[in-house]
Length: 218
Image (cartoon, rainbow, N blue to C red; front, side, top):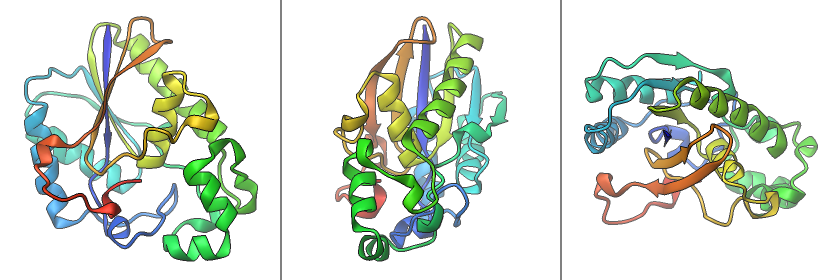
């Protein structure tokens, strides 16, 4: 059995400002995010990892690098462009409220009705395209390590879509479980690198947060 630990990157400046980053935008991790990555590592100390994979975007790479330092294991790290965030086209860099004012239907469908999302209106990427590239990557990793634990460090919207698709959630219901928080852990298991089970969703208990900040989750 392969166990896949899927990590959303640490919180960034644009997350705090409620801006879309997407596949081309990026902003630095907040100072406190490095402490949260250390807490994440503490929750994973007893897990022996065979390999780690990260998106090439800096916010994910920095999260992966800091996490591996604190895990203190000899874990190979591979950068894979298939793990990038959604290409959000013209929405990237914009505040959520400005996107809502300019493309209210686009934003509503992106957040709540993936089956109705028309990416062409913002020159972005479709849910189907994101799911296809993610599925290919994860299935490849699981075939490579049929009896191991693997780490994937990526992004909230892309992870949300891919994880739900991998466990068989219909496109119209991809967002029913809600969002993924910064520095969260979601776990999938598979016996054959094709059929996946959800073991844990959006765990942040190790961060010991007393109050949920809405900018933490997408």
